[in-house]
Image 1: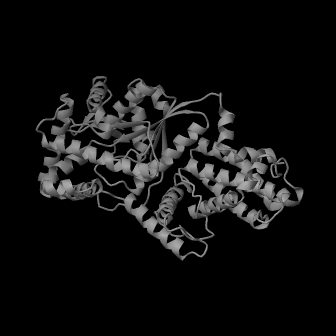
Image 2: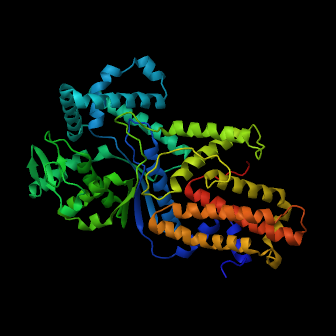
Image 3: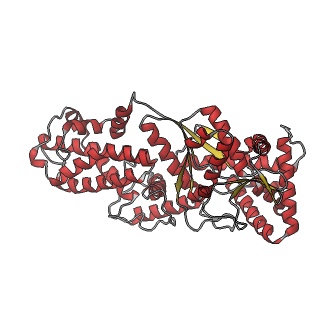
Length: 511
């Protein structure tokens, strides 16, 4: 029965890789899919905010869990490094630009903040200053011409030199945050790489008669089912080119996916993007169909998620991830110093605070269904007896402590072949059922692309382990009792570590 204590199961779960290995072995040698997962993909010249992080954390889980079930995955970070927003910054920057000496003294984070401030002011001017708006459009057309002309050296073009500088600063800024969360990508791609091809595909659609002219803009009509709401003029369409013949994000996306398919030839192309972009992907599929690539359109999957409420860079309202991490670190330190259950070595307390802060940010995201909307908060993040990251980390730490204090018994644990009937109570049976269900939770989360399937299961395991731990003491018990109990707790500890790592959380051993 699934609730009975199976020593073989516990011994397997004690091994490195634990339940992940069980899933990997199950799919090993079976049919696998080639999958490209596009996630994070932030715009440059902006602080990395909690909305960007949501795509990053969901996407990383989708990436990792697909590898676990045997798929061949390529992770892509597609940087938004082109568009009217850069022309807005370039146009307004001369009015905000500090002296070279001061600018060069700033850190990358400080430079990004200045550029974000510039964008916020420029965006307000776009709404109220017709002359400024015209200048921005003129600047963007000139920037796009610099690229489509095929020049690799932008020479004395100050706007293009500023754009190049912003790209470099943003790349370093983003890498810093990815390093904090231990996020890596197989490929870094850029929107700006597809400008020339975007114009070629737009012209191909024009030449084939699939487009229309609407107030000087090149548009393509969409089917009724491909739009969620009609445009104010009552026409269902997507814009391919502006009236000044400059490209849009959709136009560049067409070129990007066609080049991506030529490179990777994948079975599925997953885009981890917020649900507000549904119409964008519907339009993309319609256009691919008209280009004779209905096969590619069918491979595109929008892995949508709900937005983090209250965010708007245009209006200056953002939750910068750096500030969130620092706030979490402060709260974690306060908790550790005020808690009677913590006795922390001052030399490592700051490291543990960092781990708890990052754990909380990741857990807060992955504990909920993708499509849910929420407002980020640290409320109850460091409260005891709550379903939070702290509960998982404390349980892992406590079980690690039991192992470390009984290291002399581990060779006996390796050889253990029986769990005593007198210890097999209802709580132990429930814990075993939860452990046995972990494999299914991972498979279900891979199928639904929902990390919460695993997150919730880990919380249940930690809670059940706490109940068992209170009843089955290891310390001071004879070997015939202590060894099988240690085997059980060692298996649970390894399962929690494995689950946390799959979620992208570093397990804490000493708290």
